[in-house]
Length: 467
Image (tube, rainbow, N blue to C red; front, top):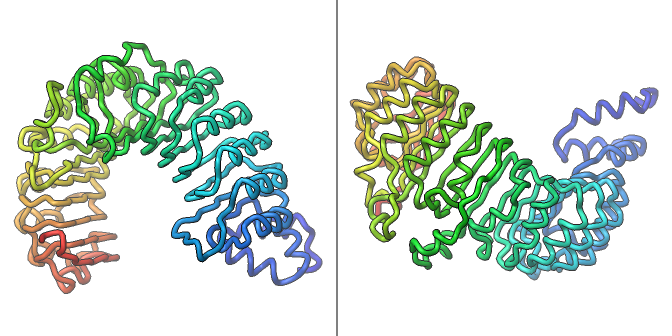
């Protein structure tokens, strides 16, 4: 090995992807140690970083070419030592000139002062802040002003990010390609309009309102009518994920639905106000949709909300079936199984979708309309490879037995299904049809019943959900 030129050793080291392997090789000799230091581009540290500032200084000097750093304090307690603070962040930015990707998770000691230090990282293109309660909108604004190459920004549970001037600034820069805002209580759906022309550059948008905070408010028509009617140019948007949002007809986020011609992934989680017309407008534009996930309110939730037309019906499924010829993944979930939705998607609507779209993965959660007849219809689903049934209580052994006849099925997942027993899985035992079978919390299925029903089997039974 001593005779190998550096470039070959460098290539060998590049094939090692786990940290433990890299550490073992670097300790074998001084030459490998030195080459590994130069080639180490990523670093992940957390509660073991004690004392934080000194340890980070030592690591950044040892690995001079670091481009990706993750600092995660999940599970931190005061007895584990002081967390990384603003001074530590200054040390990091000063000694890592190649830093492009930074994640700060549960770093509760970092304030706006520390975030301003990131302005000295000219190459920073990605920043993730997860639970940073001391950071405000002023800190994010200084980041926007200083980091001109920032393309990816995630703000998760940053509870004190109240001002939205930084959104307006990013809107003028037109640099952001991926934006994620989750559970930042002071940022609402209407604030996203302030991105203005920056919508043209966005490829991924994830926006989620804190459900506990949102549901303490009243859903009134007056609030949504304040949103401007505006054309939102988002031709480059590939992924759209919205959670606990209010969708006003023809306003705010509803404008986004009508302009996503390149959208491939759509996830709507408890979004109030989404109508069949919104889905129709979206799928007529987005001809390349490959994945759709819908989690909708139950019938119990809907009467609490005033005069907005809320339910999605078979009209949405029909529009998806007609326009989404590339759809591969589809998921429907209802929010509350104790109060199931009886007037939303019917069995025939789901069957029509399966007949017209090349769906490889189907997931149904709390869908009370899906029963043994639905399982029988899936026998003709030529592309279906993955089926997940959660809280589908109308499916019995009579329907489950038919899974062995699904042409392409390789993965079956069953969770909290009361109507299935070992008998329904019997045709799969020893058939070598399934690559993976997952059975969780189904009270009438035993460990013996799943034995040898697939190449790989995962079984768990926790029946506390029933009581």
